[in-house]
Image 1 (spheres, rainbow, N blue to C red):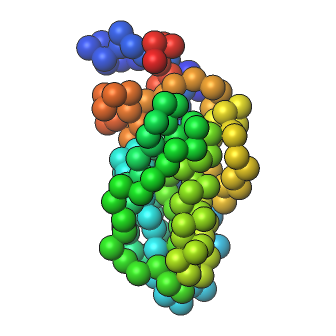
Image 2 (spheres, rainbow, N blue to C red):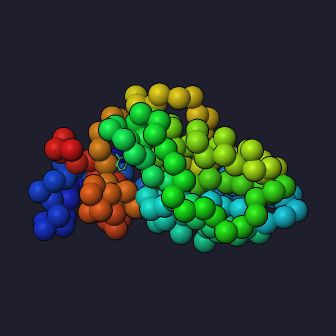
Length: 187
Ligand code: IMP
Ligand code: MG
């Protein structure tokens, strides 16, 4: 799966490509097919909630492959304090606009790391009366989990390294790379 990089100006921080664009494309097709199958009898449109900013590219690719009725909304979360999300210090920065009461909700996230962000969102959405809450995360770093989160849809499992591209950033850089790359451990 590893490929050498072909974008010289961006390479000084990046060790290797972990998931190339063609592999991402195939996997997103598969995930969309699973969602189309699982929600085929849905009555109200599925509420896709993208967690800003990291999920926006995955969400854009995913929702364009859905054949079931769906609507798109966004939420922003901030991690604060030393250690950020890793310590469970998570709060809501920008809420969705849709009403989620009685709705089937699919949280769309870039990566499951410690799990605090997704645990917070799951709890929050359940108390707001969602009919169902499932999670699609493009990446999963199992070695980093601190709380138990069950992913309903998952793209790729990766080792405990910092990755960028396909929506994920390092200090706002590298988000729009078309592949997932591993950074050298400078963070
Ligand atoms: P959590 O620790 O599971 O709450 O994840 C918090 C957030 O950290 C994720 O939603 C990502 O936005 C970000 N994150 C975690 N690992 C990485 C990474 O390797 N690259 C880029 N962002 C990451
Ligand atoms: Mg995120």
